[in-house]
Image 1 (tube, helix red, strand yellow):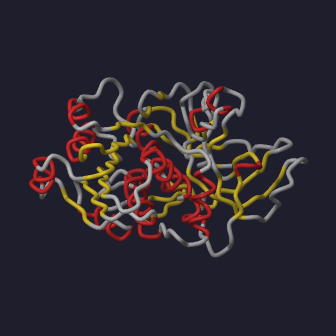
Image 2 (image 1 turned 120 degrees about the horizontal axis):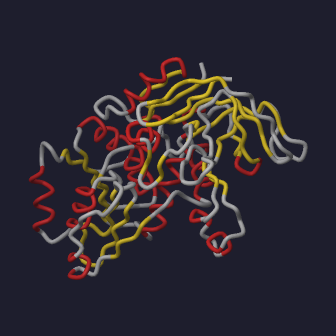
Image 3 (image 1 turned 90 degrees about the horizontal axis):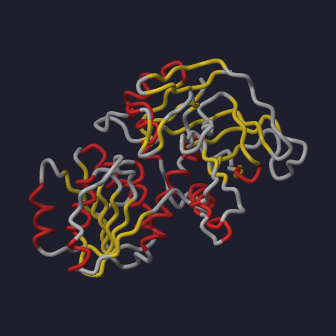
Length: 346
């Protein structure tokens, strides 16, 4: 079978690998579509993401959906021919975070396409891949594989909202109009936020943010004055999400947060220390919290997409096959033309 394997920064190739054989509770899937995530782009550009560095070749990809083509002997909940969205997160279930209801912080988690542990956990950008039975969520034929693959980033957005607390009737700020940022905006709209302001450095993703639920957008390069005015007023937003992964985005999120507000760091910041105006936390009694991946939100995300309560279609900008892997990653890295790029074996 063909698989998209990264060996280091700028060294991503399609290789032949053996088709895996499912164990008792595993499912063999044929990839229908996989979404290229920001972390995949970091692995490609830098050889790592945050503190997770490549130490061996790894199949990329953790956002995906596909068709069941084989099942282990103990599998009962799915069958051959089922179409499923695949949760890439498999916590151990026995460590302290798992036992206290915080499985997203599992100390022994296996997460598709991640170099967080060694040996690395292989991803799903392959013609065939294995998943645990409980990680497969059946989807109807009316939902495309591309849309179903968006359940993973939507789950990230839903968990970020959970960390923020209720947003009903509140004013929400989002720094960064990438896929996670626009999904936070969409989920906040469904949760009843009164005002949702999204900022970015490029106009094209901001147009998608408006289509997904933002009530207003600001192109910082073209209109920094609008952000400055918010800062000068001493903060205007009840909840602020930093979804760009850039220190400047964190600084802006803190500056525009109103007294008593919550600031949620969503984007993965660069390695090392990050400068931020933390004195604002004191003077305004801000609450700064982190958010990491997701837990039960994945099943909720699949349900929202299946029920068509949230339509990810506006963010699905491009689709490539493995034969155009280099082009797929080049387009995915160009925020002027893409939002969510999908891969399929072809």
